[in-house]
Image 1: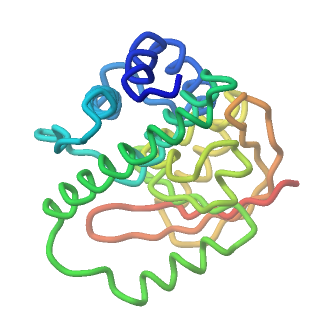
Image 2: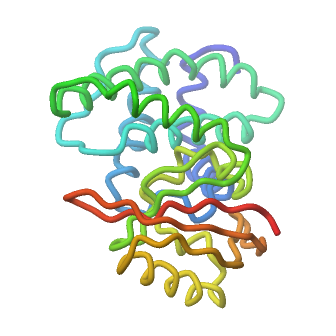
Length: 237
């Protein structure tokens, strides 16, 4: 399977198997059918197949898409790794063939996303905070108190839950909380939404396979004009 045109045909033929492996890798963080993220993956598959067949890449079709660049980038990487896994002994050839198409698609997505953002670079202080959180060994999750969705996470959160941290963004936090433990979490979130006092409690998270993980947590309220966040620091109990 050395010819890129052959790899392109193989990717199309194994599409469902690749998606199944990707969904297994991501667990609750997998994109839902019909979601905009699934449409991005569909366009990437078409872009990759076309580029591999022609031996040169054109600009990918991204018109009309509004997505979280970080999460989509993680999903694209997960799809490519799933394709390599399905390829078995030909994994290296598939990775090598997909790498430039993945870079081109990500770059186009980044340019499109940047054009839609408000002008102005992130403040240095915010970049410093993000870098510090990334180095923390404890799990960090920023959760929208109203929607219950994960707004941000650090690498330790991804490692504990078994999913790349950027793939966690915009996923319902409940997807990684055992059903029997969810009422305890919502009680703490409700308390945080009503006041600024830090809460400390013992609860459970669940990894992508559903295995419960007891954790000791602190949760702090952080509010802006547009949203209220629950900032969670968790450590395996």
